[in-house]
Length: 117
Image 1 (cartoon, one colour):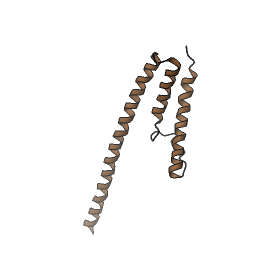
Image 2 (tube, one colour):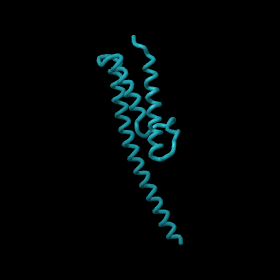
Image 3 (cartoon, one colour):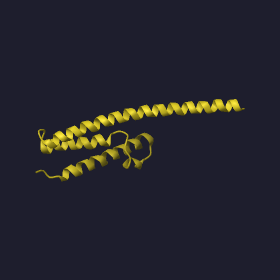
C-alpha cells in the first residue's frame, strides 16, 4: 500500500503554483497584482488540467502504468480535459453573441434617440 500524503499535497501545491503563475503573468502584462486569481477559476494556465496532470503523473510514478489508480486517473483526466476544452469554446461563443447583442442594443438606442428628437 502506498503512502497517501503525496496524493493530497502535490495537487494542492500544483494548484497554488499555477494560481501564482497567473498572478505573475498579470503583473507582467498589466503592471498590477490581481489576488482574486487565488479564489477564482478560468484563465491560463488551467488549474483543473494542471491538478489532474499532477495526479496522473503521480499515479504513474508511484503506482506504475499498469495500476488501477493510473487507469482511473487517465480516464478522469481525459474527461476533465474534454469538458474544459468544450466549456471554453461554448463560453467564447456565448461571449461573442452577448457582445453582438450589446452592439445591436446600443445602435437601437441611438436610432430611437434620433427618432424622438
